[in-house]
Image (cartoon, rainbow, N blue to C red; front, top):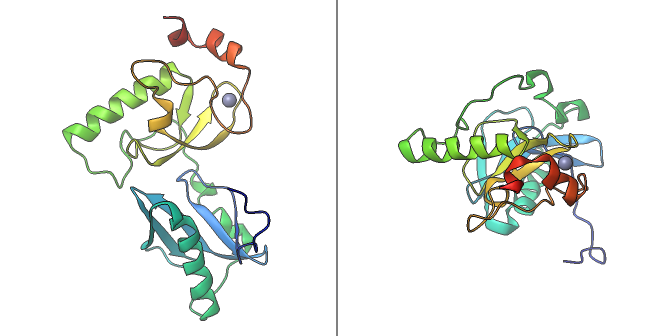
Length: 190
Ligand SMILES: [Zn+2]
């Protein structure tokens, strides 16, 4: 979709943190809070608060969630924070093994089984998850072990289809070449 000819939105989104939450700013300096997608809904956490509110659905939810924060700010209900607050989780960097399941995903046999399959496949395909399994169609923060790119991916895109391995085009921004990806990962040679 070409959005270059349209009026830019009245907010800016920063890069996601390891929980795949986007910081929302206005005037490139005032931090209004965080927005994130969780299983078909979009949620917002206003700056200075800890509770997430469901404010949008589906495909348009990112914009809706960001505009919710802008509206709250315009109404004087959000006191913007320093941009340093854009990375509130930086001091809580995940080191070492992550939990099997994302804290918001219910613990049950089905989720546990899917998470174990996903974790094993990520190991085989040289991805390092930075959080627990969030479900197949949900942003999941990853580090590419081939080039150290970091960002949100979806398990539904990483797992391959119809028993074929996943695409060697691993993520935006370019990885090592597809031939090198196949050469480095044993699962492509089976
Ligand atoms: Zn890569």
